[in-house]
Amino acid sequence: MNNEIEIREAVKSDLPVLRLHEQEVVNAERPMNPTIKESGVVYYDLEALIENPRATVLVACHDDKIVATGYALEKPARDYLDHETFAYLGFMFTDPAYRGRGLNGKIIDALIDWATNAGLTEIKLDVYSDNDSAIRAYEKKGFKRHMIEMRLRTE
Image (cartoon, rainbow, N blue to C red; front, side, top):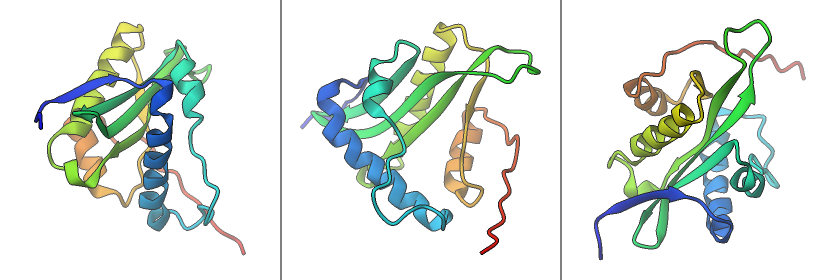
């Protein structure tokens, strides 16, 4: 077994595994967000992201096994900002057996490179305020806390 991790762009044949990883993301976030439905949750249109020339879906592979994921998508910025578009990062997932090996950081570095090469100067992502380990990982890569979303449930 090879110990090398390869970072590559996802392809359509990866979709079944990517959809399983998506459900792992949903399951990990459910305790931090009590409003997530119990079933039938789809966060991402992964096929559209793979096909979009202004997006990239990356996977980290150990041998032939996908062990980490992430995507970057160019999105329009608000009119009042100093940039017209930005890269939005999402689908950050690492298989529990592979955590602690810096794979998330390697995916982020590759996504930042993609955004930079695409001419994007602003990169954003969302993270739950209770997800301290993710926040620390993103701060290690230079991300700064920016805005807090607040919610109120009235029922």
